[in-house]
Length: 242
Image (tube, helix red, strand yellow):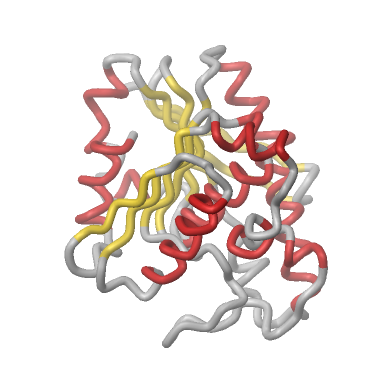
């Protein structure tokens, strides 16, 4: 399997960022790491190995990006306004640096946004905000409103709310989406959500599914047995949904 390591100074984030690329052709998958994760986690957890045949056959090219979760949503040393600002900088990094890099390496028009856990939030949020850039989105074990507390999972913005928070929480901004053009663009995207029936984020997934259904946006919501919030399950999920 072809594997490449890349590192460059990000002008969006003002720091060096790393990523791994697996494969040489096929649909481009931007794969966001789980909560506070790193660009190498999916390789270490053998999730990439689960896709090895599709990668080797030229069906998929996987771009495992890094995260800045410890500088944004999980940065308790910074005020919430900074946390959402840092997240927006991260989105700019993906859109203005990673995606153009992927497009230079591979001209395939199909671009997939995918992730597990908080990576699912990143994947779904960026795809919903920029539907013309993605043909498919896969969110596994995701949480789609980070301001809602649920058990041990707290409001990651400490009660803070402004327009930047609103427009980065899919379960908030999609609920009030009425623009027929945007709804049409979202309807062209293949949307897949997967969640365990015992996962703390089950309700968040059903809420997003209900919102999409109300807007007439086609999608699939798959409920797995148990919590299904770990690499063992994600290895199976990617082989099915990618």
